[in-house]
Length: 413
Image 1: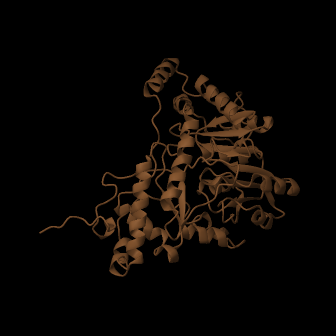
Image 2: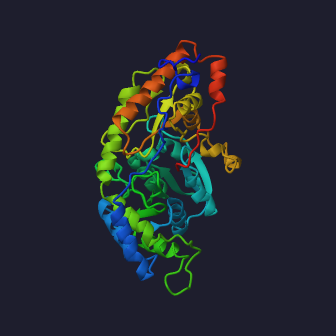
Image 3: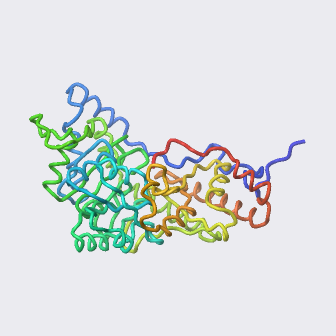
């Protein structure tokens, strides 16, 4: 004789899953499909699939939105970061966070430069200027900071440091198209900022990136660099890349520019709903967005205190997987312990980065999520906590959570 699932139990213990149809980590909003189709129909007969009017229009509209002199469209944020560093003719070392997606460090390493990892601020999880100060040495030529989850980094602190030390300052702004710092759009800070337009972002091209800068010479070198280093005469000025954005990708991005502000506001509302749903649960806290700033909330990440909550972030992610909710752990492991970078580890201690990476859990966040989905997920977290606090999830049940299947999907960082 079967019994109905107990609604007070987490799904991992036989309760009914909160999301039987699944709750994805990320899902891009859909633009005006007919408008995109019409653009494709206009592009195809021309035979001009790159370096055409759609790319130019995207660059112009993006620059106007950001309030910067130049936007250069590229094939990806990673390619943009690589080109910014190459076009700047850097040598030696570049200080980067370890609490970031690996592409930040990859761009440095691909240029033959040495990434030097520095620690983060425990409140915002962005690069801490005082940690950068300790990491800067005689061979340092630049700092490459990240606007984590769309939360602006400490722009003033990093700018002051870069000026005092006579080094360049760049931002990996992959998550930041639409973020605000002090009333200004992210994009106009430092020597250059680079955005991602991949499917998990708010401005989507399918794949692509944008380099924003006020430096005329740097912008021109990046335009040359995205076309192999060729200014048009096939006499390559430096070793560049094939990093052009296609007209098709630019057309999609132009469609996504419409409604961007509404999507950002909606994500901020979802983040507020998450705080309301989770704030009363012991052991759950949130990274801070500084007063006066606006995050895009490309990701919504919580911090899990295992002692207060009753289990660690990894176990909670597996329990939510049983509920049908997809999660990630951005960014665990941090980059400095990746196999590709372990040989660089140890120069500077990263206690905040390592402690934070143990506690992070990234929850579903997309612009079309409903308040009800957030509420139901919050209830699922509450049930999991109560079951653990009451001892129900200990011993064999805790082992069952650890063995719960893979929760991966194709959502990008």
